[in-house]
Length: 137
Ligand code: IDP
Image (cartoon, rainbow, N blue to C red; front, side, top):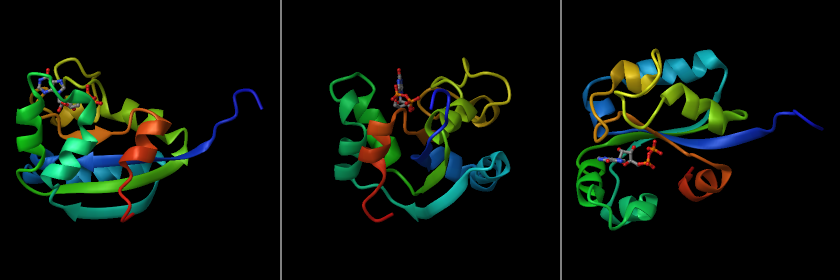
């Protein structure tokens, strides 16, 4: 039906800076308050292999090596969220990639420092979510 929302799943990850700076609880709370269901949650250290796969589309870009080094540097908190239109909803709650350009009140604007340390990742499409949700979830 036109305008009907579909229940989706999305992959969200509090990145190393967000974990180290103690924002995991605040970030999870925002998603819970919004009404999204946490269907999977775990802390893990991302391997080089997983990092290269996850960020494969950025291979060759000037920031790629630094991005891989950073995302594998210390544990992340990964989760799968479920809810109506949750892919775009969660992205909206995160704000723009660059925290300096993120809308007021968004996660990246509230907690972020710079584009290379922007606290959180969220799938940008259904195809990305299907690719990014770890098999172990
Ligand atoms: P997204 O995380 O908002 O989907 P993407 O363009 O997919 O943004 O970039 C993936 C990640 O790569 C960003 O979250 C950020 O951490 C990093 N990144 C993107 N562009 C730059 C840049 O110009 N310099 C440094 N890091 C960047």
